[in-house]
Amino acid sequence: MKRKPKYSLFAGDFFRTPHFVKSLLNSFKDSKERGEVVANYPIYEFSTGDLKRAGKMLAQDIPYDADELVEVIRLFKISYNWRNSHAYPMHRVRHELMGNIRKNKKVGITSARMKRMKSIRRKLSGSTTKLHQMQDLCGCRAIMSTLDEMKVLVAMYYNGGTAHSVQWSKDYVEAPKTSGYRGHHLIIEFQAKPHEVQYDKRRVEIQIRTKLQHAWSTAIEAVGMVRKEELKSGEGCPRWLRLFALMSSEFAEEENCPIVPDTPTEARLRRAELIALGKELDAVKFLETLNQAVKYTESYVGKHSNYFLIQYDSVNKDIRVRGYSRVGSAADAYSGEESTRSGVNSVLVEVDKAENLREAYPNYFLDVQMFTDRLKDIVFSNVQTGQNVKRSFDLSWLKHFNK
Image (cartoon, rainbow, N blue to C red):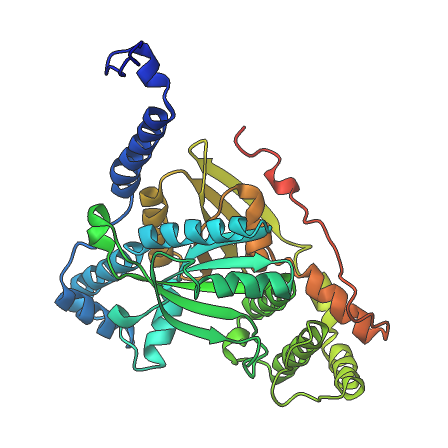
């Protein structure tokens, strides 16, 4: 009987076995993850005491005493470093979010962002939350086509769909905020592997929305940016706030969901109020002209950018987009811009490709077309509830990308 030859480490056939190929690929993958990828991300470099002192300062009015300037600068540096140290957990959580969408064979836009320092300070000054306790310094977002797809994605996080720990969850679809905000939020606590221990237990927020919910959210942010009012936080012109609450109820009804508290349950009354407000504010005209006078400037650092610094200058009507291939460089640029250009709204985001930027963050491009189309139907009494308004985004600003 002929003996079956054993595989030798140096035999050519060994290197063609499925086991070897799989082991080799996994080895390369682990090497990249443990070496190049993790090393590129910022780590926290200060003490817990330093972080608490920095958080206390951010919650107060910043002193302009020259004698304290050096300490103020140091505490801001600590604050930026703490926020930026959440970038790696944010990256991992977003990739898991993308994987969950693919497992269901669905299509969704995912993105991630670091919280603006201005927003961090506002939250600290308006609550008892401390900087080291904040759970949304970094956040991920998924935009799904339908409510059913959104619900399936949310359910995955309660059925083994995450390697991390779900610490908190809030369904703003079944219980909308009085402002009109709707969506589903999760707080994820990052569970680090041995080579990621420096990021263990960092918390990342996940926001999951439908396209309709996203259209409402970005419209209220864009109008707030232009009017320099925190409309999304319930601050600013009462008439605009009321218009957004009423429109959110229209969207909720279209998705067969509970409407916003303190808005008319009868559609006829709700739309009558919307028509009156729309004409009083000249809302359709205001929304339609938002992005007509804005100019764009794009620049990219590295051939394959996944991190983008988006800046909106309301004075000069200028939107600037800079792309980075390395997160460390992107985080440093973000911190630098925030500390030196107080009159400019900046946000650092992570997306798979530049083409997803505008769809994930239309508010920064003052793109409110979907919301405007729905409002226009109501104001001009041509309501077609349930009919989806489709629009392809103008991505001409990307024509020189990577050239």
